[in-house]
Image 1: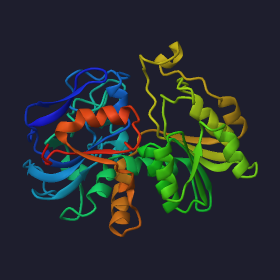
Image 2 (image 1 turned 60 degrees about the vertical axis):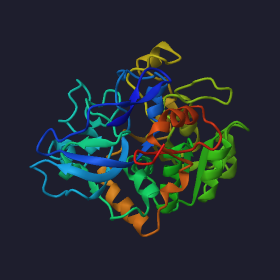
Image 3 (image 1 turned 135 degrees about the vertical axis):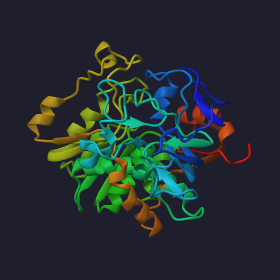
Length: 382
């Protein structure tokens, strides 16, 4: 089968790889109809992780079940499904408590709880930027979708970024009526803004410097804050008459840059500590890594980032972090899409055949104007 393979920094290639197949009785094989390029894929693409050369990439996947193992009895061949990026066993302590992003059984890498498709340190699993994908523990992991092709571009966000944006808002502790600041208007930040508005936020401020992303935020009723124009904390503080916001979402991660393009991994955390009112909450779903060989400082190379914890403590702030347990949210979000209440596909800018994945990666990574979310369709002619 054809698949997108990592070949070193700034290089991916579409190559022939061994076919995905049922290896265990609880496996299914999914024929991929849509697979997305995620912002976190760019960490690997840029050489900022320990991902091995030859890895098949892709953790945002959906499609149609092609084959099932003898132990699969809920999922059937022909089912249209969303594939959560978390790979979970369904029976360990964390899975039973709803933390499928921290499954204790599926990742053999020492010190790592939780696994994912096609990602550095997240287990030996191939990704779904391919014609087919093997899904372990299929009965537990797969989410059934309505038959047909309706809502394809909305449903494809259920594998990761829509639940991740929702999770960021949940981690912040938001309740209806709160003001929320989302730092980062990439796909996850836009999904966090969409989620906060659905959940009843009074106002949602979205901070970025890319005009196309800010325009998307404003198209759903959020307030765009251009940090290249002036200090975003000052802009939001003025808009809230000095009070600050009730909740904040960090959707940038460890590669945060200032307007000049210099990297400061603590930048967004510090800004959120300043702009969230005392006793408020912060949800961090931007990616931070235990090791980052390309970091700007020696401490950051080891995952040690100096941020304003003193003010965080003094203000009585709370913070939640970590990868989203997709299955905690994806059924409800599917139903919001079906009912017309959620339309996460508004961020899609480009739909490409699998063969054009290198172009998609390059333009998305270069932040070329208008390239806000790239979908790959393995069945689409080149």
